[in-house]
Length: 161
Image 1: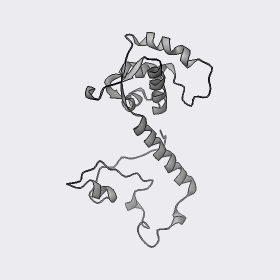
Image 2 (image 1 turned 45 degrees about the vertical axis):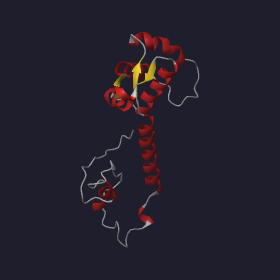
Image 3 (image 1 turned 30 degrees about the horizontal axis):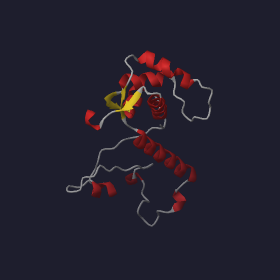
Image 4 (image 1 turned 135 degrees about the vertical axis):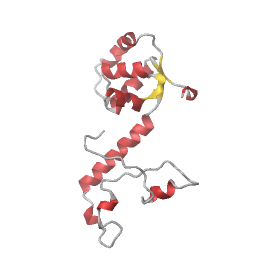
């Protein structure tokens, strides 16, 4: 997640490619990601539009954000907990947390596991849980992976929606 300010703008038929994809008869759920709204840049789609306006650090930052979005979309899912009592389940997973390995990129903390177990009712997605817990998606995803591998969590059937 980014700590930078952002704005979600409503669809406008004055948009760009998303205007075509979201038109009647097609209506695909398409959005547009941009650093600067095109209408606020006078050089866009004119002869003054050139690569000198693109900063490598800004381009790299945009790529990191797009990859982060793809990770969330790819890693999101719904789960059901297999344990009857959340605290007991976390206790049984604790040895996996403290196995001394440092090679895992996102070793979940106990709070992330508690949130995942508490809200894994087949209705909440991992993104829902991360938003509610105010934790990074990667921490929630890591907790779900650990809990699933220890048998305390299982993917929710598609009909649980």
